[in-house]
Length: 368
Image (cartoon, rainbow, N blue to C red; front, side, top):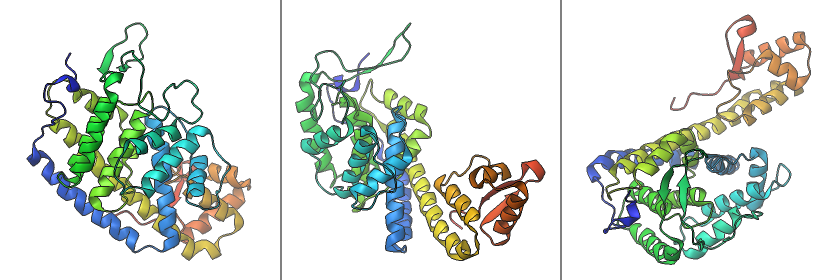
């Protein structure tokens, strides 16, 4: 097996520009639409969207690596990093660490990439990790850096990265290319190459996936000239198998990475759609409260608040009367009246009949 970094022309990546051009056009169009949506929001709503998107990315980028974080703790940490009063108690070191990295990415998107930036992010992520030897620096262990399947009876090496002794040289070349490519490459190509290149080097003992995705988002922001606040990790996490498969297939043999860039471009476009839905959801939230808040009793407000906390995906299958009773402790007759009133005032929509009746937030459909 020949890994990509073992090619004689490493790291001179090749790709078919025509295969990517239409994606670049769509990316720029969607980026303009997202920017327009944010531009016409009030400052308070902009801040809410920013916190929501950063916290969701922090949770999802960790979930890709199999680490499940408490969303409320992550969001509170982000609020704290932005100088706001946190809405939840302080989280675990993992929750605090990824939150700090994501906020730093948001604040310093336009700064050139450097070894110090990457070391800083790694230190944040690895806070409290006693099993990691090299924290805040590139790996130094002599044994090969390998990605191996979890099967103990028949382990398979999916990838082997360059040896640790070459990390400083490899990363110096990576950083130089990243910073220079801002003027020479389009957004999707630059971001896609940066991610594959970084993951191929795998410079850290742990945390490479999370930092690699942050580098990709930094590239997108720099090419657009503003923070993307894009739901990249959310789009990747939605189909992790395809993500790891695309990385593996393009980390071996020759230097043609067209397939990877097509996969990555489609993922970024899906991430933009997710971001737009989140923005629309939060705008809809403001409008719903504006028209219904004064009409709702305390039980109804508690349930609507709870539904919004579920995010854009909402309650699985919709809110049921049983859900309402659990949240409010109200008897069934009161629940029936409350739900009917919420439908009549336009806060909820109703589907189904009898025990199959379900309720959803009455929000405008994205794009309508």
